[in-house]
Image (cartoon, rainbow, N blue to C red; front, side, top):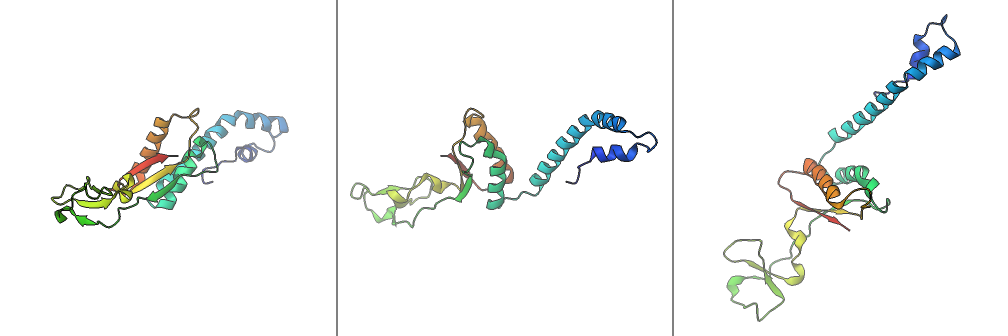
Length: 175
């Protein structure tokens, strides 16, 4: 790693040969243990910041990042977070101007998301909740003893909001 310092080797290099001795070197190395811990923490922090800086909104990178950060909360660590494109509605059957009453054909429903004059009609099986989102973040079941579901969702929302493309909407689903 870029910021790793080998303190044992450094102590051996800085102690003059005429003051050497096993006990003195071990004593000086033991004094530097807090610095070793601090260096280890800084190296981990630098590694995390480097990963965050290289992140993009590409699906495979975002999935990898979320799995790396949140796999410790999963009930089954083999399962992974996946990101899927939302399923779009099928082709419209006809416009409401066609004067076909809904009571004659109960398989049709109005599309409520659009506010146009002539709402498009779809089959009931084609209308999904996911169609109003750009992508869906599917998460495996989490261990609620280590983190609450609301905290987990808030953390995922923070990271997805940070790296998603502007204007894209999403939904988080926990299996």
